[in-house]
Image (cartoon, one colour):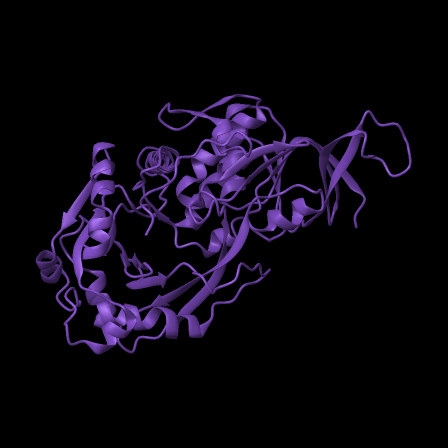
Length: 432
């Protein structure tokens, strides 16, 4: 290990989307603050940020969910429309295809979201059939394969309008550029080995800190040396569990594998450019029952990215370099996908990859909390991209010792709501 030692006001561990947004807002709110971001990879956003499908939406019943996502989306629109930095942000919508059972289950939830000002559009089965002529909106009563798989006719389409997709790599590029412009340092190829934990006051006793001493994290030890800092931000997603366990601190998250498969072909292109849903003339980000397989449109590539969240029977597991499984597409995704959308018949993935969700298994929202000189930001549960800007602002408020964070558009948010003991997050009811 190299012997060099540096000092900063704040060191941020992890140059994923949450770490970058946190460093950006710490610098924005405290000009002159000396901030370093430590990243083991050769460039930013190469961990789970690079594996995301980068869907963004505001369709939530929980106020916390809605505020974090909506203010972040508004900031991304500001970056693209006013700052003229192209994030490839496209509000093509999210389209949930609901069976009669699901439509009934969420009838009151949909009404509540409308009353909360969420822009929604409902599509009837006959409309969907006309706009998606090759799809199976209605399942024939004699369809034995559908019966075996438990597939039912689509009774309604629910489209969230302030929803869509963004290019993860472009948002990473924006934050990275701005961090450097404000004087922040990003230290690549620098893996964190351990935290610098020291007693206060330091007595020079063997094996300090001892259990009866107050201890504080004073920075990190990396493969290149020691980086001392007054405050250390841990924004490493699923990696935080292992890093924090060495300190005896609970990350409160579990790792769950996520897999994405890229598909293309003549029939796929026909479906992709379905008219009538949005001004872009493409199928929205579409979710189909019963497990909500998602289909992300990629207009410029003429492809779809498809995937589905893991379920009971799939373990919580962390892999340093997770790999997508061919069988997961063949047996878990393809039968349902091709049944509702015959466009995908005999289509095999031309590319595939896998990452993780850092799941907060209690309420699916991020944890942002302080402990012994650390600020931990994790548990984004698959919504890191859509909530990253708000999370970064809240981390910056915690770093500055503030009780309230100011989110984009002037919305005030009590930082304690995302803490551990002080947590105040309403249950999310739009969960399928």
